[in-house]
Image (tube, rainbow over all chains, first blue to last red; front, side):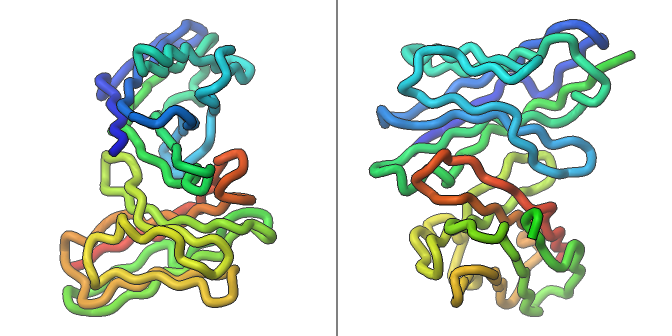
Length: 118
Length: 115
């Protein structure tokens, strides 16, 4: 079974600064996806960024980027130029499965509450 | 529809009652997933469908929980004889295809409170 661990229950950052959220995972599978989801106070679940395990290049989406270390099973999220609207709970998630049929079956971490201060 | 729609948004029920939670996925999405999220925790997988076929129900906690998607579109999650420990946010998500990009589109959830 896969496990996803987020060791930082809470983080805070000043507006315009950079913050990194940590995530580690454990799996015996070779093909999988990793995700970061954002859950703002509205309680929606919003996909922030996705990484495919077979791609060595780290994914980036505007101010969001990841540091994917496959051997270390680490998948951290870096938020640059933090904005007040980034305040949310952030979840790291893993999806994998034989034949690709389980790529929507996500295992989530416990979450990190990020607060951006003005 | 434009997004995943869930109803009711809020449900308060008494212990022992049955509840049915509805999910209307994005039009054309083949796969539909149910998750449960306790307050302050990450979502936990319950079950998923490709079209009308239930592919995996390994996350359903016990036999009081069941789900169906009879015509491959709208899905219903039913909890029989509710207990206080069933209180949580129940989220539905859909994706174009389970084996595709893996991206899920989540609904806003149904918050269940069992008194």
